Length: 222
Image (cartoon, rainbow, N blue to C red; front, side, top):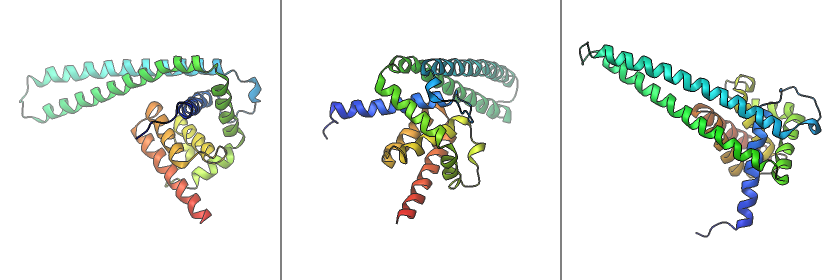
């Protein structure tokens, strides 16, 4: 299989970076923001995003440290009990949960470190303009975007989702509608953002909502 032409890869990478920058910028803007986008400083908002994520993962590390300490104490306590008792199973489950949590925090720290790369690339005009265009479209079309998403939510409302998941979905809708991005590309990009910034539940939910949204639009056009 031949590889994609270098120019095409560059365009795809630029759009992915613009999409990711837009997500980070949206996270720093109140959902009812009415200020003109010309007043938005991409660099300052990205720095705020970096500070917020850094604080989040610092708190996550502190929580993991406490949980691991508790698990260690439980393990020591279990040594004085019957090895076949239920306490052994509970300690094992506790340790497993701690390790999963630590892995998530480590992945999150890695994601935060990537923001420095985005900050450097944010000065590239094509990426900067692409990010701000997506932010503008989300802000201007938020009501219609949210309504289209709510229409395919099964037993949920968009407002009940974490902010990061809402914004990933909104950016995906902008891709599908205003920017005419192919569904497979928009869906894959949204899931990748969820992988980096959300969790497994958020990733599955976003994938499912976008597929239902695509199916609904296909039925309408049929």
